[in-house]
Image: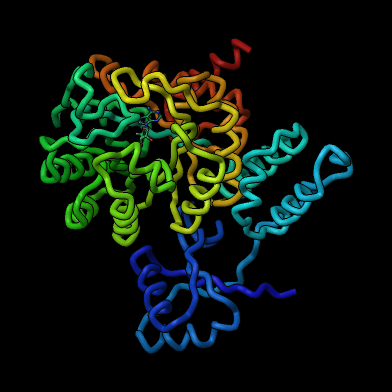
Length: 440
Ligand code: 5AD
C-alpha cells in the first residue's frame, strides 16, 4: 500500500525552515522529521506533509517562488523479526503491540513510551535494547563519532542547583583558558585526526561573543575543524554572529521538560526562553543539540517520556542523556545519583523514537561505571566525547563529583568492547587498537 505521507527535501536548513513556515502559514499541517539516510547527512531534516496536501503544498511553494530539492514518499523504517515466538508469555500483549508499531516504523505515544521506560520484565527490556541497537545500526551505522571537548572556562554567572560550577559554589576553584591555550589543544586534536572540537564553558562574561567569534575564525583558519559550541543562553544576534563566524553545532540542553522542575533546578532561567533559544539555533542552521538529566529530584518516568517526545517534535539532532551525579557545594549534594539502568533505558527509547540522531555515550555515564559507556553504545548511542581540557584545569571543571576524564584510550576501549568501529580518520588508532587486541 502506498504511504500516506510525503517528505519535502530542501537544499539546506534555512530553506527547510522557510518551506515549513510558508506551508504552515497557508494552513497546511507539517511536521519536521529527520530526512532518510539516502537524502543526506545524519542531521538533515525534512518537512513531512499528508499526501492529501501534496498538490496544495506544491502550489503554495510555487507561488512563493521556492524550489525544493525533492519530494519523496515517506518510507518508514521497517524492522523485521522483533517479535518472535520465544517472547511467548514472558511479555504482555501491550508490549507486543508496541513492538509491532516499532517494527512498522510507526510513532509511539506518551503512554507507550512510559511503558518502555518503566517495564521491569527481563525479556521486554532485552527486546527494547535489541530494537534500539538495530535502529542505531540502520540509521547511523557502526562507526562511533569521536569528538574532543575543551572546557575552557568554569566561571559562570548562573546558579543552577545541580551544577558544581554554579556561581554560588564558592568551593569551586575557578580558571579561564586564553586563546593560545585553547588553540594548543585544538591543534593536538587536529593532529590525531579529530574533526569536531566542542568548546564548552560556564556562562562567563569575560569570554564575550566577540572573543568567541575570533576564536572560531582562528580554529577555522588554522585547522578547518567543525566547531560545536556549548556556552549557554545568548541573544539571537549573538547566536547568529557565532554561526556566521563558523559555528556548526550548538549544545544547549533543556535538562527537563517539566516546567516546575526546570524552575526548581534553574532558579535564574526561564523555561520558555530556553526553548526559544533552541528554536533560534535551529532557525540559524546550527546542528541542534539538547538532552536531559536522569534522576533529578522529583523527576518521574512521565517527565522523561515527555522529554523524548520534545526532542522528536523539536527536530533535535544531538541528544545528550546522562545520569544526575551530585556535586559538592550544591543544593543536591546529598541527593542520590541517577541510575545507570534508567539512563540506558532512556538512551534506548530515545533512539527508538527519534531514530536518526546523534546520541553520545555520555561522560556522566562513564563517571558511574566505565562499562556503562560500553552499554550505552550497545543500546542506541553512537558518539563519544573526549575530555581534552588540559591537565591543570580539568579537575576544576567539576560540574559533578568524580567526573571521568574520558580519553582516547577509554574511547578505544568502549568502542572495541562494544564491537563497533573507530572512525577511519582517527590516526593514532591503529597502534592502540592493536594493543587492545593483544591484551584480549
Ligand atoms: N549531574 C549530571 N549532569 C550534569 N550536568 C551538569 N551538572 C550535572 C550533574 N550534577 C550536565 C548538564 C549540562 C552538561 C554540560 O553537564 O546536562 O548540560
